[in-house]
Amino acid sequence: MSIIKVEDIAYVRFGAPDLARMRAFLLDFGLIDAEQSTDSILRMRGSGSSPFIHVTELGETGFRGVALRASSVSDLEKLAAAESARVEPLDAPGGGHMVRLIDPNGFVVDVIAGQSPADKKAGDDNTLWNFATQRPRQSAAKRVRPGAADVVRLGHLVCLVNDLPATWSWWQERFALLISHEVRAPDGNQAALFIRCDRGDLPADHHTLNFASVPGKSAQFHHAAFEVADVDSLMVGHDHLQAKGYEHNWGVGRHILGSQVFDYWLDPFGNRVEHWTDGDIFTSATPPEITDLDTMLGHQWGPPAPASFV
Ligand SMILES: [Fe+2]
Image (cartoon, rainbow, N blue to C red; front, side):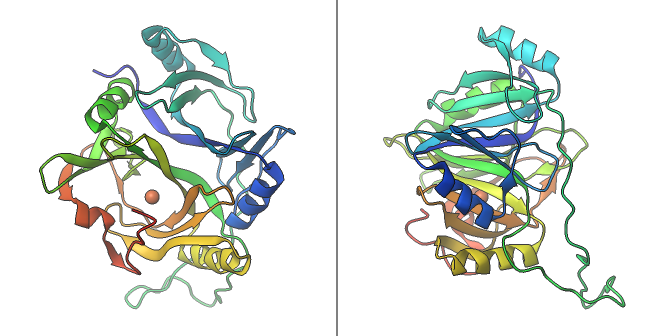
């Protein structure tokens, strides 16, 4: 029995010595300014209803932590009581409260609730797609706005850990998470877990978290992934980042596990960030599946993963 359930990922936090440089990249990546950025904290949002989804704190370069959204402040109180932690005000756009925990890998995990949603920014019109067998866009031309992608929301976080069973126990015991895919190594050991939130009858992303096993190595961030409006948005975003000279990492392609169309980039401080669209969603009724490493790192189309990704 888990302490609480969580609904989704809320934000990721990084450190960087130059917030202006990070902001310039994130604007080109498709994020927009959130309210309340200061000289020492940069907060950026997507076009969806989250007040912010990406935080950069002035300082040493690196991954600083992740936040998950719980359904109520009373759940935060329950969690805080079980963890001998405390519920603190979330001093950020949208307000709310948070409990800060540290997982067995040393990852800082903020669990937040009571945040007020931000106004959604209007997306582009004419987003209907015509397929050969179904042509809903009639008497209207498709015109794709060039420039940065329309990043709507944060979708998932992937980290490398050295004790995957201990990591899974810690997260599942607290947040009632579900496994979508368990990836096994040739020796039969767990190599990675694709983890989604239990929203009951509401469908949730195929994975909100992914932990991959790197025994003997130090736990580390692998990538944070942001959902964009659609494939056109992903492709114009790709052209835009390429024209600006940023470092591309992998894509464009379509994953097998989760099915997303994906495109990976590195921010100016070396953090890997992903644009994705058209991912699988499942209710809590779908059971876990077991699969292998080739399937995890394979793709349905697009180029193979470079060595730098693996
Ligand atoms: Fe991803």
